[in-house]
Amino acid sequence: MVRLLPLQANLKNNPIGLAAGFDKNADILPLLPYFGFGHAEIGTVTPLPQGGNERPRLFRIPKDRTLFNRMGFNNLGAGIISERVRKAKPLLPSGFKVGINLGKNKLTPDADAALDYVKAARSFLDTADYFVINVSSPNTPGLRALQTPEALVPIVQQVKGALQESGREIPLYVKLAPEMTGEPLMKLIQALESAGVSGFILTNTLGGVYIYREKELPGGYSGQNLSSLSLERLLEAKTYTSLPIISAGGIMTVEDALKRLKAGASEIQLYTGWIYGGPFFAKKIWKVIQRSIP
Ligand SMILES: Cc1cc2nc3c(=O)[nH]c(=O)nc-3n(C[C@H](O)[C@H](O)[C@H](O)COP(=O)(O)O)c2cc1C
Image (tube, rainbow, N blue to C red):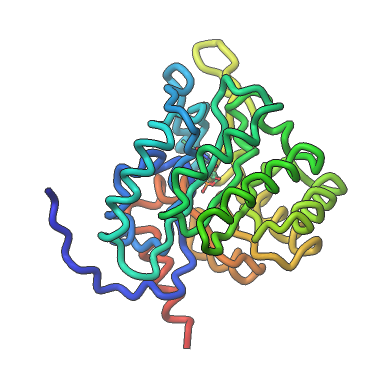
């Protein structure tokens, strides 16, 4: 077993998280605080294990500091992942938060989606510091169609019901796509706020296609190409709600990170910026933030 040195860094109020999809199966969870993260979002976790889409399914586009992915919620399933999180928790420094990003299995019809979110959540009632309902991945057919008040409010209500079984207050966030804007976004945010969500994660990847060997592959773009859109969504959503908003999408520099926090993000999350910025990118941001805290 690997022995970890005690972590010296102060994690209190560290607003930098690892976005969902990097440590889908909680493989490296105990190591993440050492890289300067204050929280990590595990998953997307589905109730049953699934293999995801066929490879290749992740592409680097270095000239644009962008990634394109069509992973399709490959993960080991809620049973195995919740065991891993249970084992990792005692190794994490106090103040480090573990989020669980919930999804539905590909073969579950949209009409039964709520059941999948509830099932996956139930496995983590003793370990999650917060939950996220993910309805914004472009890689699970039909998933984004759940981004309406009619579809999403009942899911939120049922997941909240399950969370009450934990006997503690576990925050519940909803993660939305960058394409959501204008009246549909306003109505959705207002309906979800009334349904009692704790906040929002904006945004997931930007849906699109990537040409690979003359074939058009559908999937999602992240990184630099998403940066201005993600900031726009944060600013827009701030006009609809005063609930916390975790900003993700194209945070590629320390300046990007500071800009999001200044724009009112309660926290920020990195994925593609960590890939292109190197292993200690989060640590670099955290050092600058700490210097600016009196
Ligand atoms: C390879 C890859 C896999 C991802 N998987 C998930 C996922 O399983 N669930 C999810 O909510 N978001 C997932 N995301 C989206 C990220 O969490 C994040 O919202 C998005 O990439 C925008 O942030 P970024 O520009 O810093 O990468 C994934 C992103 C990438 C690049």
